[in-house]
Length: 451
Image: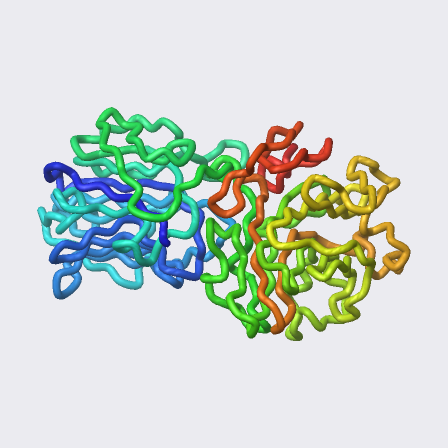
């Protein structure tokens, strides 16, 4: 079921002038509704399936609309999107304004400006407002943060964010100085609270699904599965194979083959993640290089070195074509696979349910005690991590003889919508995991990259 929020204001506010500001990390391949209300006419604010941002008022035709030319298909990024509406303006193009990451959008594939003093059909009316879905459909499968609605003022993006003087990146203003008006609200502040953080107490209700608190946020962007370059067989697949903020990977039938990799790749440092495998038939978990996505051949028959995986049948593989390696013993449904990647010493370690396999010691440094990369059958230099340009965590289902389903915890503290049962120790303080994070390792996130 789609996760979405609902609220019906007790009375109408200013339907001519309002602002919507929020941060989003989204699945770029499906429709993602931001705010939706439909009584006899539609008021819709959404990402389309192609990644365009679309706002419209519709009653037998578009009475108001902005549809961006730009597409926003980066499933690894947080976007700050602002819609400012003020239909009292005498110049028609000033009545609707959009901003993405601080920049005003000026190029639209469709632009219908409302008549002067036009009232939104539903937004800020005393009708049901839905955030994250269209009456339960087209649910937002990504993440949202710092969602503001302003009743009575059209603010620019600079009211909610600013440019970092050092990095030049657009960054969040966690406590903006704004006036919310009667129906204004501020929800999802630093977590999953839908209790209004503005002075108004305009609280929302959970309309469906499960709302989780993720560590992934605009100020610390965590790795997820990359919806933009996941593969279904030899063809890019649709977004339905990724759910729960792009941390749940699944194939749904024996006829499907698929591969996903993390949104962040690394060349140095030490990183830890966990994967709860809920369908083991022929599932792979491990690491891959970026070349795995560049060949026109099917990735599971490539002869080049493309990754190190723990296979559901109990094999650590270094070459998918040869399907060879070292037997570890398998894992069963709901086992949690631990992966420690040491790019400084070019070593990879696997564990299961709190125990490192082969008496592995991810803190052993250059001795690589018990690492996959120290097995005798992996001594061939062509399979060494030294030859990887960049490394990603991965999961895959390489066969039409099985189904693959994997919940990844890259540090969010959840497997899907289920929180870790008892968080392990983590000296870096970056990320929440089920088991203890080896000393010197951290979550794969923007803060983790800079530790």
